[in-house]
Figure 1 (cartoon, rainbow, N blue to C red):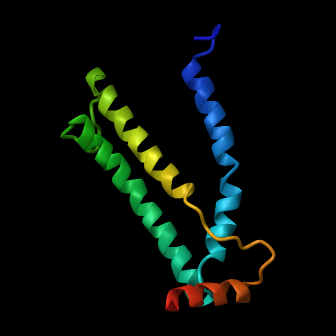
Figure 2: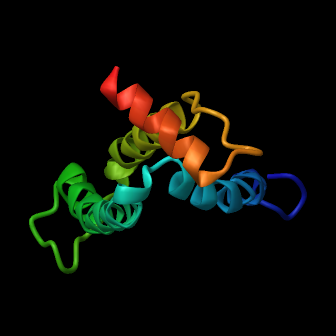
Length: 123
């Protein structure tokens, strides 16, 4: 605690402030790195798999805490460690993929990006 404020909530606000600033970059970049012929399919499938993850994540959490009731799981205090361990592993996994280098699309037309992607796929 720092005065009346919980350090956990202060750090959570800080991380979300920084993390939310990256999403306006991720959306356009993700759309640019698909070849034109696959752009709509690629973005649609990416959002679809994200939606599946939104269902699998809570179901997996229920299994991690050891509850048999998927609709209304009863959370025990001794399940804090497994829940936080799962959260840390998922955040680390996502961070590893977000920090992997991509290629620069700044100042390139869609045709130039397509030529690079098709050339890379053929090689």
